[in-house]
Image (tube, rainbow, N blue to C red):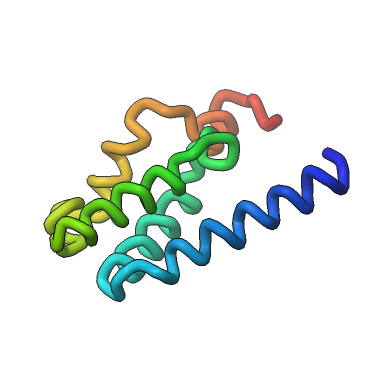
Length: 101
């Protein structure tokens, strides 16, 4: 990974967090809980993919439609996250399978 890649990654993350901060308060709270859960569970694709950006897109759309965050995801944050990642491999799966890389 080059310095340019690191700089670009930081730029993208700052833009992402600015979008999250622009969400209504209930969406920010739910997003923070979703992010904590996903970071804890550790789906491998989280770092490589667009899951968090897709969540912000989903939330921005819901907020624009006048819906509350819990209307979109339901009462169980963990169940919503589990549905998002489905059968996606996690770092815990890799560890259990002996694939630490």
